[in-house]
Length: 144
Image 1 (cartoon, helix red, strand yellow):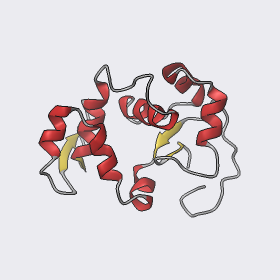
Image 2 (cartoon, helix red, strand yellow):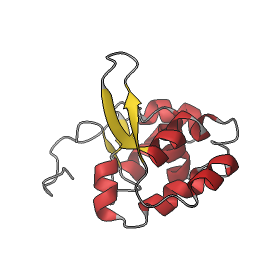
Image 3 (cartoon, one colour):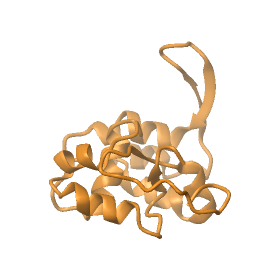
Image 4 (spheres, one colour):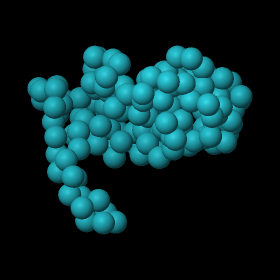
């Protein structure tokens, strides 16, 4: 489904890149920050436990030097916690594993074929899960 609520005519394949659409997630799950908080490492759970719902920080794009405000929780999760060796492991569910890989990849779009290598699941299974009628954790085709 695309942002307007209409279904996309483009059927994803195992080579279609997927990403986390945080804007979709924010409008469809009121507990999204609680979920993200659960992925923080112990050190950053302590840092963010007393921070309100919004912890905006200034972020400088390393290529353009443009300064933008970003959600501090998302930022620290993707730039630190998701890079820890134990962040992606074999005991997590398929959707959680894909979500974690996308976070550890800086939410750079990645295809089910590439995800298959990282989560040790068949690309077709990943594709079926992510391209079904239900959107899991905001994971959607990057072109949406």
